[in-house]
Image 1 (cartoon, rainbow, N blue to C red):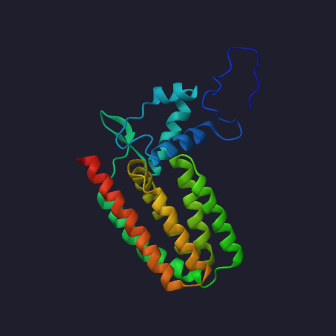
Image 2: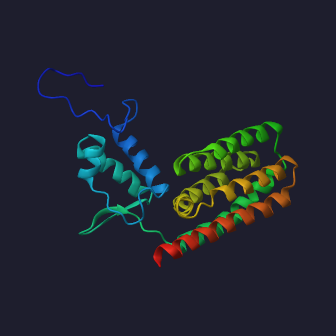
Image 3: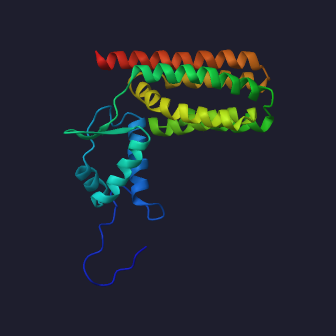
Length: 232
């Protein structure tokens, strides 16, 4: 932290939003905005004005610009001529293509993982399901959901496939958050997760694959329906 020289004023200290000095200010702003975009708290195509964000976090516009650059690199925001920076629009084609790739790769992961699943894996996944069942807010629910999938795929021991799936799930996450915000599908998703874990516990690879196929397809259908209603 830079010490004051006694000349001039200290830079504004972010307090109302609880930013912490241990992480870069731009990184923390990006984290907050990312969570709000992924959970649809900030909806698609909504403007993100630098001056408004700077006032919200009690900072200058410089870290805000850096935060928005980071979110643009993640395809969460777009800069448009005469429109400024906005939350990226939702695209049905992206949902369908991403879901199709997830089906191909994640079924391979889950069937491989089922053959190597241990009692410790079951315990870890169960702990996360307990977190999901008590989660408040879409952002917390999504973090726990991501952790659950990381745990159940890890025993597959396929790091390259897992890395590709991780990127696909990041693309898909925004649509999932939007759908959960609009439809309340999350409780059904928790039930599907419990059934999936039971298959893994019993080493039922093919049954786990079929359940995962149903899980991804059900979520995708719900997303597409939420988008249809949003566009109507």
